[in-house]
Every structure is written in structure tokens, then in C-alpha cells.
Image 1 (spheres, rainbow, N blue to C red):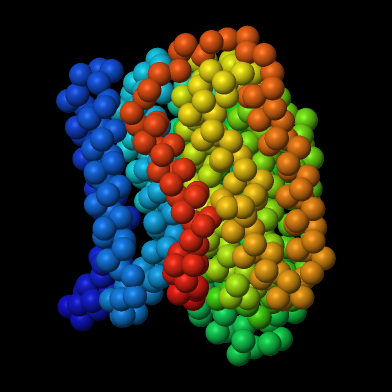
Image 2 (cartoon, helix red, strand yellow):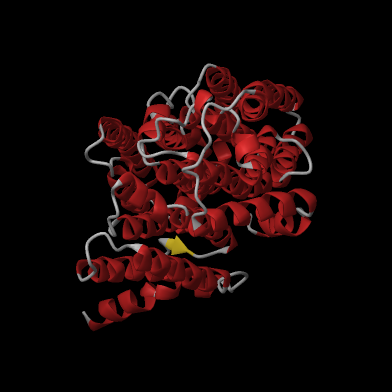
Length: 489
């Protein structure tokens, strides 16, 4: 018995989960602090959450390039390698920008509730477990921690029908995703006898006949469906725009970036390390889905007049762009996916931060008509939103152009020339609905004076950070792209 206990203790290694552990401890501490805080006073909880983000970022960066023995633990279930660390920084950027734009927004909407911030921290911790997981069960647990917190956040405005609808629909989406994922895990375990991703890959490589086993193929497809639900890939995107529209605006921004990046992190690790031998099969499937996702997302975005819903369909299209890099399955394409996740986080959260400042109580003005003349009445915010939209279009010298360039270059290098061409055509298609926002901002007569748009310190800081990142990484992307290449497993 003593030997078993000693073996278990030797396998623990809290260093392998330290970023998620620090964030979870902060989240639980903030829940207790909130109990003793006056009702409606949440600013201190928001800023303490930012302290948590900063401390966790230091811990996460400290894991970069550490020896493999120091960053693996729990009997090989987690690994805080460069891949996980790169994604952890993306999650922290998404969480930090979301928290910054949230406090004044919640007070405006009449929901100054301190539990909001620990939920974001715990959701981010779940995303970190997904990125660090090298066992399918660890990835599943991370997905559940992330999802449960997001169910609550999506339906946070309990008195609003749209928010209730968003929470319920996201719960159903999560339930479907979980069901498919668990069934896929069960089938792969039945074939290989393990849930360790690397061991699954090793077993399949040692037994090539297992690749044609119906259970293996079905397990791969079911795992794909589980991840594709989380990424909102067509045809698994159906309720995603409803959820994005009904959720609080900062949470919509967060859902479109952090959890989506977490799903991509798990997707990449499982399929390249565990199912790399089936690459010819899953790349053919993802090729078709990438094209469908880009076209459906962009075409449906054209018909939207609600800005949150338009950006929701835009998010679907951008998931399709990122999937192109996964189809390429080479160093340029996969590192391009990592870079693009960071790029999309910055430009999309920046755009949503401007919408947070623009919105009235109840957000009834977040429409094309509601934004008419905004560029003239609030020129600085108008310019910021224009830059973010240019980046989402993929116009140089913004990070959106650089990110798409890397992804499409990877596709061309892998021989998927037509896929890259279709991606470029979709980027051109997206010009219509992004430029239409600018037309309303600058060429339509204002019906409002936007007097309610105040300088909210947190949201303005969020806009400035995102703006700096969008322009810096658009002009000087090399260093971050080199880090993305170093993060490949």
C-alpha cells in the first residue's frame, strides 16, 4: 500500500496544472470575498480578477521551454508544454479583455453581481485543462468545467427572455457536444484499451489494421462532431448565433474567442497526436466542412442587421478560416492556426468592446440603424471600430491579414490551392457586411447624438490593448509566429 501511495504522490506534479490551479484558487477566493461585499459593489472584484489574470500569466509564461519531465503530471494526463502555454496566453488575453469591459456594462444593465468574474476565471481554468490535456478524460473534464460556467454566463440576465434563451440553447448545444465526445472516447477506448492520446496513436500505428476498424472510424467521427459543435462549424452552428445575440455582450465576445480556442487546442492535439495515422480521412472531411463554414457564415452574415448577430455569423466564418490551417496539416498551417486564434481574440474582442461602449441599456440600439453617424459623433471609437473591422476583413497592415496569410500559405504549401483560393474569395465576400457597418457609421445621417457613450475606464483600456495588438502583430508578426512554431508538438 505504501508503494502505491508513493507512486501516486510521485505522479501528481502540481506544476503541470499550476496556471489552472492558480486561476481556480483565485476564483474560489473571489467567491468568498463577494459574500462579504456590499450588494452592487463589484469594481474591487473586477480588479482583483485582473490581478488573478496577471499572476496566472506570469506562472504560465514561466513554463515555456521547460523540460518535459517538469511539465507533465498526474500519470501522464496533463502536460504544460509550449503548445498548452501558447493557448493559455490566448485564454488569459480573452478573459482579461472581457473582464475589463464588463464592470460598467453590468452596472448599466442592472446586474452588478460579483459572481460573474469568478465564473470567467473558472471557465478559463477549464479551457487550460483542455489545452494541457493529453488524456481524453482530462480534455472532457476541462470541457465540462468550461461549459458549466458558460451556461450560467450566457443566461446571466435572468429577467431577459433573450438571455434565458441563450443559456438554455447553449446548454443543449453543450449536452449534444458532450454526448458525441463521450461516445467517441468510449469507442476509441474499446479499440485501443487506453484514453491517453499518445498511446492511442502508438497503438494504431503498431496495428495498422485498426485504422479500418468500424469502431475506430466511428470514434474519430464522433470525436470530430463533439469538437465541431464547440467550434460552431457548419452544420453544427445552428444555435450559436442565437446564443451570441442573447448573451451579455462581453460574454458573447469571450465565447467567440476563449472557448473556441480551447476547442481548437484539444482538436489539434487529439487529431495530430492520437489520430495522425487517419489524416487522409479526416482532412478530406474537414476540407468540405471548412468550405461550407466559410461560405455559410459569410453569406448569412450579409443578411443580419443586428451587429452582435452579424459578428456571430462572422465568427462562424472565421472558424472556417482556422480550419483551413488544420486541413493543411503542416508546420506553417498549424502554427498559423495558433497565430490566428490570438489574432482573432484581439480583433473580435476589440470590436465587441466598442459595442459595449456604444450600447444603451437593453442593447436595443446595437443595429445598423442604431450605429448611423457614430463615426462622426464619436470619432475615436469610430476609428477604433473601423480598424477592428478592417482586421476582420483581412486588410493589411492589420493582424487579420497576417493571420489569414499564414493559414492560406500553409494550405498552398500542402497542395490545397483551391481551398486557399476559396478562402480568399470568402474574405472578399466578407467585405460587404463589414464595409456596410462603416457606411452606416460615416455616410448615414445620425438619428442620435450618442450622449450616453461615456468614457468607461475598463472598456477603453480593453479597446486600446486590442488596438495595439492588432496593429503590432499586423506590422511585426515574426516573433509571435516563431513562438507559434515553437509551440507545435
